[in-house]
Length: 394
Image 1 (cartoon, rainbow, N blue to C red):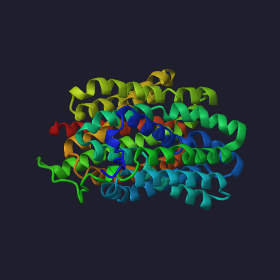
Image 2 (cartoon, one colour):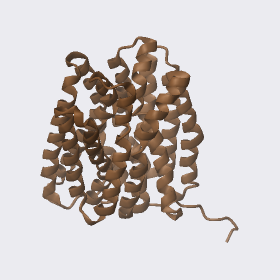
Image 3 (cartoon, one colour):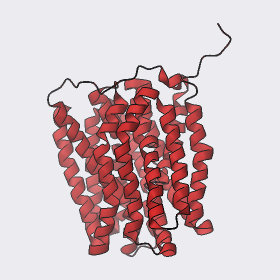
Image 4 (cartoon, rainbow, N blue to C red):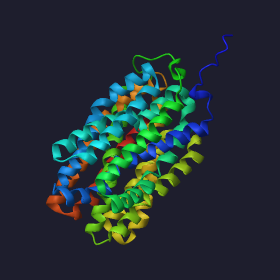
């Protein structure tokens, strides 16, 4: 005995504390990236005169950088553990959001979103799920679900908060406030949650394991295709729902109120999955998520009088989809090399996400709001078809 206490390991911390800490950082992470421009786009355009498609391009560029960086983040996490990767993500979010708030032209604005994109690769769900899978192995599934339960409140918390901050201080100060929150809250959480070298003791994996089942390459690409379609749908709704509803005649307050239904509904879907999902193969949860998203999108496309019910159904499915994003690969491929596998698996979906806000903005500019919900509905039907093919491996 040397008198020194052993380093505290994440596995030794209470799991509800780990889930709450990760969940808080994910609320902040998604609320200041995916959900940010739904509230900030119009104030930015009003002050700067930039076109809405240029403003949406910032998020698209950030997502593209995240897609390019995701495999590197996964490999580094497998080798060095979660602490340096997640802490780096918090720093990138802080620097990037400060840059967005201080930008004086579109070039600086888009460059700042590049830094935010690095933060997405290192600090959002995929990195968090990878860290949990590395620490807990197959036991990570309930923890992943718990983190998504917290993260489901991102829009509910951050849309009203962002709208309030913009109303009292403007969009630039709002970005700077969020940057400060990252430095004062998210960064300390990531450094405290992973003290010392506690999460480096696990043997690092150089590559994902060989999958011993028929057609593994097809399995990989079908899962990747479902992730792509789901990501495009969720990103499109997150960025454009409020402006599109306003275009159909809803007031700003009513549109925000409808959008705020997404968070609790996502959480409700995840609670149901948490209660029942442990008895089901993740493929059935994936199918349920796809069907609920399709049902909600169909109602939005056909009759906006039932928008609230449709948004609840869509959001419950979207909430479950975030769980299976982490649990399905874990069950199908195993925990060895999980972070590297996730990094490779999400590249197509992140690149698709990068294009989705900009393409949707261009479509809305040229064809009007009427094309938005039918386009989303078509994507949800395609996702159901892909998931149906995945059931071969249940």
